[in-house]
Amino acid sequence: MDSSSYRLRTWTNNLAASLLAGLDQKGLRGICLRTTLFLSLVGATAAAGSGLLLCYLNVHIRFWLGDLPIVCLAPCTAALALLSFVLLYQIFLYSHRRAQQEKKWIVNLVDKDFSMRLSRHTLRLLFVTIVATSLAAAVLGYFVVVSGHEMSVSLMKECGKSGNTKSIQNMHQRLEDFAQSHKCSASKSLDSCNGYSKVFPSPAPFASYLKVLELEKDCGGFCSYKAPLFNVSPDKSVKQEACAKKMGRRLLSITYVIGVPAMVGGVLFSMLGCLLLCYDGI
Image 1 (cartoon, rainbow, N blue to C red):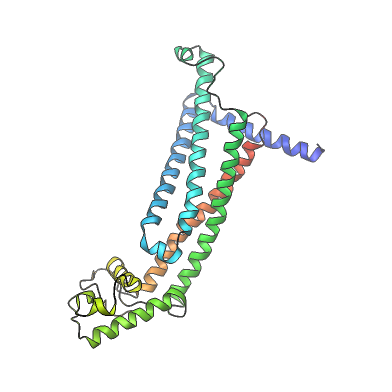
Image 2 (image 1 turned 90 degrees about the horizontal axis):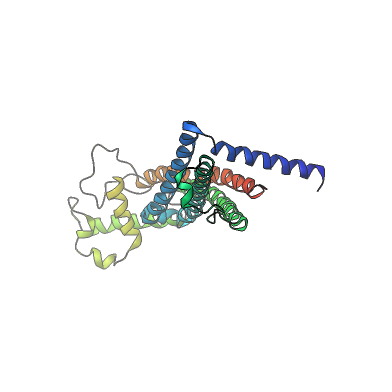
C-alpha cells in the first residue's frame, strides 16, 4: 500500500471512529443525540414510504411521470430503513457496553460473548446495500427532476404540440364539438348528456382524465381556459385557469420535492456507507 493510500485509509478510519464515538457520548447529551438521530431517520423513512404510496395512488403523477417517482422512492426508503437499523444496532451495542462497565443487572440477560453481535461480513453486506440503494436513489432522483421539468414545460409552454398534451387537447376539442352538436346542458356534467357513452365508450382514458382534472383541480379547458365541461359547480374562491397550466405547476413542485431530497440524501448516505464500509474497526 503506497503512502497516499495509507493516508486515505487512516483518514477514513479516523473519521468513521469519530462519528461512532460521537454516538457513544455519555450523559444527557449523548441520549439526546442518539434519540434525535434515530427519530429523524425513522421519520424520514416514514415520509419516503408515505410518498411512495401517494405516488402509487395519485393518478396525475402516474399519468405524466409513470412509475419513475415510485422507482426513485423505493431505494430511498430502503436506504433510510437500513440506516435506521444500523443506528439502532449501534445504540444497542452502546447500551450493552455501558451495562457491562457499570455491572448492572441487565448484563445477566445477555451472554458475555454477546452472541447477538452481527458478524463483520453481515455488516459489510449492510453497508454495501446502503451504498447501492443510496446511489440508485440519487441517480433516479436526477431523472425525476429532469423528467418532471420537461413535462412541466410541455404542459405550461408547449401545450398541444406533441405527446399526451396534444392528445388531451384534441380530446377536449372533440368533447366541445359533441356538447355543441348534441346541445348538452351546461348545468349538467357532459357525461350525463344523451349519446355520450356511444361517442366516447368506456374507458375513454383521455376524456376520463379531463373529467378528473376538472373535478380535482377546479380548472377548465386544457391548453387555454374554457368553461368546465364536467365540473358544473366549480369553487369560485379558486382562480379559474387552464388545467394544463395548473397541472404543470403542481407537477414541477412534486418532482422537486421527490427528486432533490433523493439526490442530496442519496449522495450523502452513499458517502456514509462507503466510510463505514472502509472502517477497519467494524
